[in-house]
Structure formats: structure tokens, C-alpha cells
Amino acid sequence: MKEGKTEQCQFFMQRAIELAETHMMAMDGGPFGAVIVRDGKIVAEGWNKVTSSNDPTAHAEIVAIRRAGRTLKNFDLSDCELFSSCEPCPMCLAAAYWAGIRKITYGTDRNDAEAHGFNDAFIYQELCKDISRRQMVMIQLMRSEALAGFKRWDQFEEKTRY
Amino acid sequence: MKEGKTEQCQFFMQRAIELAETHMMAMDGGPFGAVIVRDGKIVAEGWNKVTSSNDPTAHAEIVAIRRAGRTLKNFDLSDCELFSSCEPCPMCLAAAYWAGIRKITYGTDRNDAEAHGFNDAFIYQELCKDISRRQMVMIQLMRSEALAGFKRWDQFEEKTRY
Image (cartoon, rainbow over all chains, first blue to last red):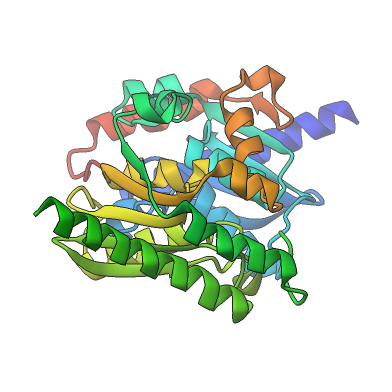
């Protein structure tokens, strides 16, 4: 039984790796692929489309998560797993948290990505610094005006939480 | 001159706050709005659409960045600034880094968001932990097979870097 599970995981990872390669060769974007799995079946596939779609957010995992949400008609993917050809960057990892995903299987890691020209490791470092020490200039403005929106949200009875 | 610049920033922030409120009331999603500005003009607007579009990644900043890329026909937004009604969550902040954005102005912060029911601060904490200490289960598998994709990328002459 355990062995069957391992083989299944290898099958899904193999598919993520295939997607990375196929769509890189098709010039869709960088060499990254991902699949979302529920109940032992692939419910969505994604691959990097940053350069072909002029969308800096179109990483394989983001594309797969968006498709899974649309297919399952649910923004809560807590019954799903993510398989990605590479360790998710902070954008994609945070997206997995927002989606409620609890398990990620990945091939290469952030240092492999960095060694091949991608900024994953740098962005992880930046996000974990104090705001004042980042390369990104970040300025807070009009907090009290913006807070009013949160207060209205609290009182908004029709809201859907996520 | 300096005063004019401050007023301009307040104008863009006001717009981000308005988008947050208008689209929360329209039940598009949570109370978050964002605008992308280039050369003193708004080139894209975004608001949270997570619950209405079943897209866990449809935060205001992601929506605005995607629209800006499409409008400007460029995945490189390094000549743009981001204004957001709330400090970007790790997903949105990393997206800004990937887009090449260098300056972010924000209203409320991650702790305000957390106090009103959003997981921003928790996800920041998780991302900065060692993989083994996160709530997210993360397993590495088939690294050598996945590495082959990076090697092919290195050799792929037609590639567009990002």
C-alpha cells in the first residue's frame, strides 16, 4: 500500500516535470510545471506562462491553483495536494496557503532555481527582512482611512469569508 | 514640488481604498484594492475577487499586476509603482518583486489584516520558517529528474529571460 502511494507520487511529479519541459520548449515561459491532485486524480495542470502572456504572476503553481479553483468551483482547495517541478517561490507557496493546501511535493529547490537564473532565493530573503531593510521601498500612508474598510467588512453581514 | 508629490500619492491611495470598499460591497471579495501607477498615471486597477471568482490568488495586487502586464504588453513593470489599501501579503509582495516593481505604498498593515480575520501575518511567519517546521507538509522528490529541465533551459537559445 505504501509502495503504491510512492509510485503515485512519482507519477504526479513526472507529469509536473513533463509540463515544465514541454511548455518551455513551446516558449510559453520558464521551465516549471505543476499539478493539483485530489483523491488520487489530477484536477488541474499548470506551467509557467510569464513571458508569453506578459503576466509576472503566471508561475506554474499559480496557473494550476487558478485552474483548480475554476474547475472545482471552490476557492478552498484544502482537499488538494500540489506537485511542482521546483520548490514553490514565496508567491506560489503563499498562494498554496491561501488555497488551504496542506501538502506540497517538489523536485528541485530554490537554490537550484537561483543557480539557473531565477530569483526565488533572493525573494525569500527579502520577504523575511524588516520592511525598512528591504530593497523594495515600502511606505505606509493613510492607515486610518484604509482601516475604515476593515471596519465596514466586520459589519458586512453578507460577506463570504476566506 | 514635494507637496504635489504627496498629494499625488494620497490620490492613488484614496483610489485603492475606494476600490476596496466598492467591490467589497458588490460582494466581489475581501476589502482590498490596489492600483498600478506609471509616469503619474493609473495604468491598472485591481480588487479582491477570491470568493466571486473561486480564485484563491485573486488578491487586489495580483489582479492589478496581471492587468498592468496585459495593458502594457510587458511582464517587466519596473517603471511602475504599486499602491495598495493594505500591506501586500507574501504572495502579492513576491509578485511585485517578480514584476520588478521597486516601490509600494500601503494603508493598513499585516497586523490590521490579521485583526480583521485575514491570515497575512501567519503566512509571513510560515514562509520564514525552515521547511521542516512549517504547518505545510513539504516533501522533495525526483530532484535529479527535475534538474534536467533546468539544464535544458540553460542550453535553450530561444529562451526569454525574466
